[in-house]
Image 1 (spheres, rainbow, N blue to C red):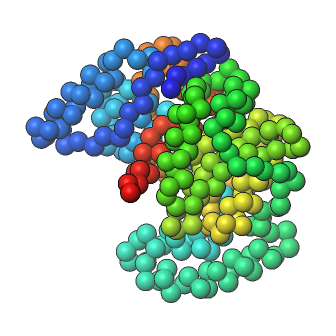
Image 2 (spheres, rainbow, N blue to C red):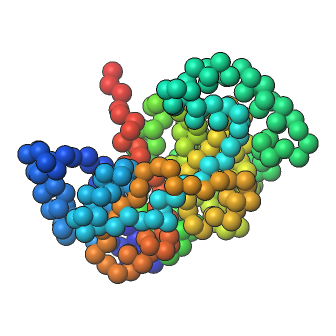
Amino acid sequence: RLVVMGGRRYQPAISSQFVVDPSSHVGLVALRLAKAYLEGPQDLAIADEANDISRRIWEGLGGDAALLLSLYWTRALRPAQLGLSFAGGRRALAPLAAIGTPFAAIADALAVRAPGSQFRPAPPLTTAEPLFAQTVVTHTPAFCGAALRVEYDEQAFQRLLDRTTRRGRLLNAVVKNGASVLGWYIAHVDATGAAEVAQLAATAATIHDVLRHLFHHAWREGAVSVTGRLDPRFMQPLSDQYCLFHRRGPWVLIKANKPELQRALASGATCLSRFDGEWSLRFHPQHA
């Protein structure tokens, strides 16, 4: 994989999240390895599944947190069940969440039928096809323009796509208007019904159609919500679709040795997605 911006190519390095105890012998070794990594010859280092401890270590070693790229959005599809999923994650409220599940389903069914309800996504006006690597490789330059992006070959991207397909429910589609490709999305639905978007591709003119298809697809599949990492280019369309913005999720950490890369990452002038980093590592290959 190469990082491309405005036709220029840079050498990246994608890092895994690390958690160490600096007071231990192993922790000191890990810190030295992390320091050597960040001082390496690459133009750009990124860790995009980092927790708070990782962020403190990274910043202590001279890196930065990309604050704008660390924001997330959530579109509630079944609000009562979404609320119960938060309650179920707290030990004290878990029994209440279990008891309330049937009532939440009824409440969501009523919410969908309410006049003018925002919880029933409008049916798409477009068509869709399964997503394959060839489409991504062919159309990504046009969708990203001069923004900072990852350049894949078909084999590498298809391998990542196949990896995520092995576990759980994967929602992916190329959204089309006739023969024209409007964009695509890749999302994974977990056991709680939360759909997590790994990649969302569109232009300013097509993002509304792509979001409309995504939300309706996720709703029909029984998802309670759709969450993704913020692409600043799409903030207004996401707001128009009743999405809430928040800072609950992994940090995006960066160490850029080129000023133009630092500016692009700080301003959000990027086409980087969770599919480009460590997100797919959570889907361990299954062995026969």
